[in-house]
Image (cartoon, rainbow, N blue to C red; front, side):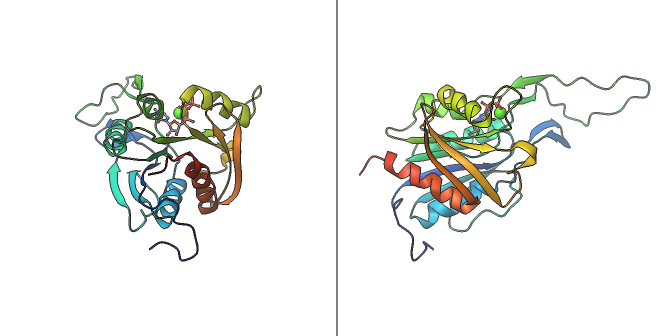
Amino acid sequence: APSASGPLDLAGRRVVISAGGTQEPLDPVRFLGNRSSGRQGVALAEAARDRGADVHLVAANLLVPAPHGVTVTPVGSALELRDAVRAAAAEADVVVMAAAVADFRPQTVPDSKIKKVAGSPPPTITLVENPDILAELAQDRLRADQVVVGFAAETGDAETGVLALGQAKARRKGADLLVVNDVSGGRAFGAADNTVHVLDRNGTVCAEATGTKRDVADAILDAVVPLLVHG
Ligand code: CTP
Ligand code: CA
């Protein structure tokens, strides 16, 4: 149920959120995956629900329960996530790509388990690039006036800091907002608290938030609401 105190500033809005981490099959029993728990995406789904939105959660291998009161479509791989998000996004006012999508997937997936063969070298796994779901959504604009939000988990490196990497990514992706998350030293993945910078498509910082994933979720939605066209 909506919270008694908070604003219902997403009433009547349809919000699609992808959450979790994709798993790219290697064979029938193995996959390439990542450490995303889905907590931030789930917190966003709860926050949007409590602000009155009709929420559709595309859930990739969540390590936490999906919230009550939202529509859930479970997916495994990046290609499955892409299909589910695009189908839901056709009717959405807001799409948030909080999922950690594998950049690459194994080119071929055998029907049977990969086996060790005595005396043979380890197998070589050829990867192919997955589609960039966020960049496609930002490019295609499946619905007029749709607000497209991406996330960027950055560690920074010797030359470039987290914020500068996020700014370059914001300009590259073409999303309306990019939420930049500092994941250096294993921060953020699975953690309860979080610090993010919210950038617009030019890379300008329009909000910053620290706190629980719910606090961060509400700060992100605070940045989304002014971008929504009335009606
Ligand atoms: N994303 C996506 N499809 C992909 C890869 C990423 O939609 N194939 C989305 C993520 O859901 C996230 C945003 O793009 O919202 C940024 O993901 P990130 O991994 O930080 O960016 P990449 O462009 O993949 O760059 P890199 O991993 O090289 O930093
Ligand atoms: Ca990536």
